[in-house]
Image 1: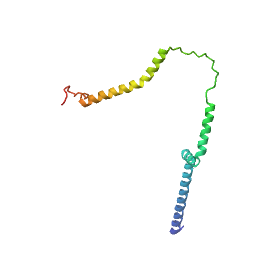
Image 2: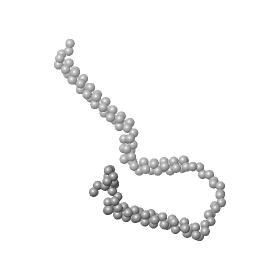
Image 3: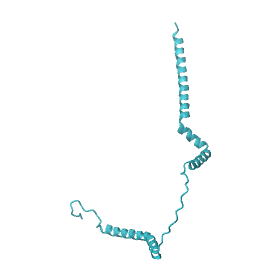
Length: 135
């Protein structure tokens, strides 16, 4: 039979070996997790070599634009028909196109003035729930 001190030393040795083994396993686990983490590896690679990644993305975009563009078909030549407008209609169309922004500005100004007047007078207040205004 083994002596009690010899058993204690063997137990202490087993505990020390199990702790060392546990540390090696946790280190191996964290290293494996880092190697298997694609987002972390990608981020690390982007920080290490940004010029290569930018060049690769430009080349990939160029190749994709060449591969996936619609086929070019020769369009049948259709004779262009020019609309015939007389001078009066052309002038009227131009005048309405130019007048739209001015009319919008004028209407906005009128609305602001109206709201300002009514808010100062207090006539734009909500009616009270009883129907009788509170003063």
